[in-house]
Image (tube, rainbow, N blue to C red; front, side, top):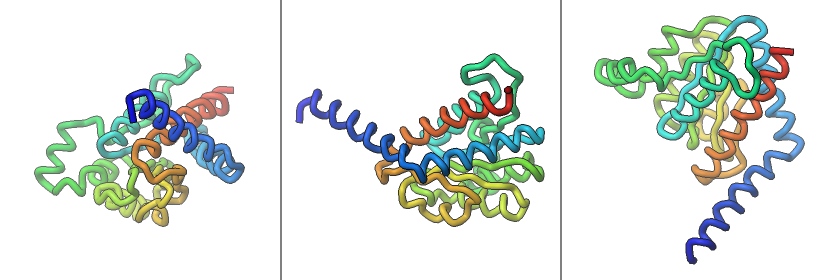
Length: 192
């Protein structure tokens, strides 16, 4: 394949994955996730989010949309991306092991009424699984973003969005669209 064919194929594959998000059960599930986040913000609680690698960047992106704004100039919403504090991440990795990188921070920041969002394209990242396990012990509502299979986290989350692809790049592209949908609806519902 030449470059144009590769580009065309990648765009087509991305569109196909996103088209699957238009299925009624997917739309209803996205609405359920968004409603829970809206409820959390209306009740003056916060969202805590994490991921590794590209998903760490997605967590930072989500937090920025909540704290700063998406499309509306409005009050800031509390959202912490656990991938943002390099000093904490490296200290936890050094002192407790990398698998505790998110659970240790969740222990510090989470309180009853908050939401914990875990992003893992495989659904099997050990540090994500540890954080979800702790969230359950702390009685924190959990939302997962993962791939079509869901991995271990699929059954650990209160709500788990399984992007309609098993390809990492397509999964991440669906996650970004989901983040933008949530941001749009949060602004519409919280700031009527």
